[in-house]
Length: 352
Image (cartoon, rainbow, N blue to C red; front, side):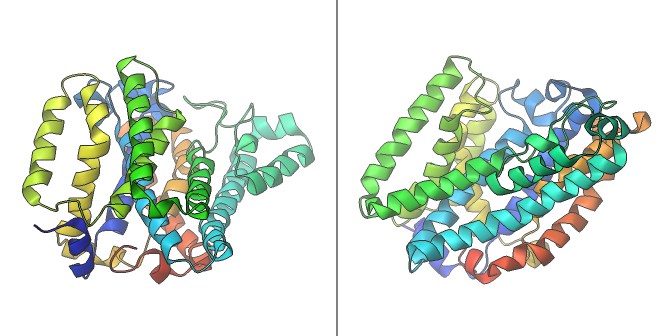
């Protein structure tokens, strides 16, 4: 039986960066609906939300899979790191430079394009200090003030994508804690922790709770990625299993909340198959060029600028007009923030 571990070892190239870029674009598409139509816009034509009867949107699925992939990569990074300080430095350099740049980029756009906001903050010293505080503590309070894009369908928010970044960083610290107590040597305990959070997350779904911001959601996907890496030698790797997962998800999409409940396991497996089982030649350029983080960070304020024009307040127009600048922003992040850590270290041919 071919296992995931064998596949990773024998795979000269992978599609993880390509997958993450597609996930970033999925977030942009999903955001284009509330940014063009207002709060609740996801329920008014977002393709995946409509198909799954509001179980999941493209944006929520993308964020889930970001955490899943991150769980694998960061766990492997810990096991590969020589010291705790080595691991933490890599994590800080991965998150902070691009985050700070995104905060500054969003702040500049606010100051230029939001006259009502400028009038409200006057000299802007207090707001500037808030920007600095956000840059240190990975928060985004300075980008959610009254008057920011006040005439837009989704007002008072400059960058609604940043809320996942502090959660991501906390997951990095969780890996460090698990490693510090040598729990990676007891992979069954990690699997049991995953089961606990998965059951709690599933219960919330069956209870009809809004799981969008629930910690148990992110921990489920992140710990799933961690467990996949730790148990890779036992996980079968088969295109037929991947096909079966797709079929089950298609059926589950019509029965709420089963799509959302099953997606961590089945969607995660499909992601592994696409990442390591397919050869996508036209996306080979993404192997050593990760544009996903920059694209994800800078998309929201650019989309808000597009939504300032009432003639462009169609979700699909917003997506098509705003997407090209995101790639430019992603290249900027890669040039300035992304080089802070070795791309080979983060995205080796085996993905870890």
